[in-house]
Image (cartoon, one colour):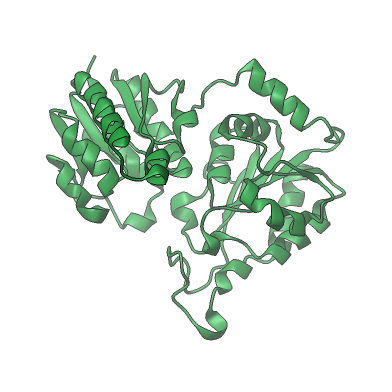
Length: 346
């Protein structure tokens, strides 16, 4: 069995998009070790597609800054990586922080793309040429090109796997959802993400909630930072789990839902990976054909406003005047409401 190192440190959504690649690698007889940061560790650890997960604590290091303690920890992890004596290393992140591990891991073959941010292509000794424009292919299939390069079987199969949910987590979720009206389908709304320009207009969210509130049980999820936004959208009338859940709890919550509605975010990608609820993902500045939930078009939906400026894929709007940040206002709530009605009826 050959040993392969998969380097994808963050973010949550991008880690999820690498799971099908890990499944193909393992199916073809590779022992898969995955380097991952705090954002994705709960997705990778104990995942059936992965033999071993190694945590790279980027958030902790960034928060505490340079210190001898962090340097010692870095070299301790590096020593653990090198002891594995990997046959192959793959860098799907293609940034400086992933290139460092690529360069130092001592794998015989270091495979990356010919392009990359922050000179990351210098981390490899074998280069893959991207097939087609980078924004025209879904991230899952972009990463699958590594498996195609290795001439592996099953590269046309997209299989998401997640760690099994513990009884403890199920009990926690039972308590969190104890007040949900189970006579109605449960709809999860996760309205926030880390990019401001990915956020759909909060009044659009409010209009959506008011239109569907009698047909379903609405539950909000998010972080502590999202509480104010959720309070505005839901007017404190619905179950609000902001700040009360981690990735493990969200996997179980999404698995119990009929529908999850979110912007282009880790929540949307996680909901799709559970393969249980329908998912509506609303796109403002990013490309739905690259990051949207895909598969059954009666179950998975990725929508934007169809504006000429979309997708700009930037954190700050490059336009001015009346065109400034117009993408956050589309699609109109009526379009999402129609999809929700169809999903709940079916």
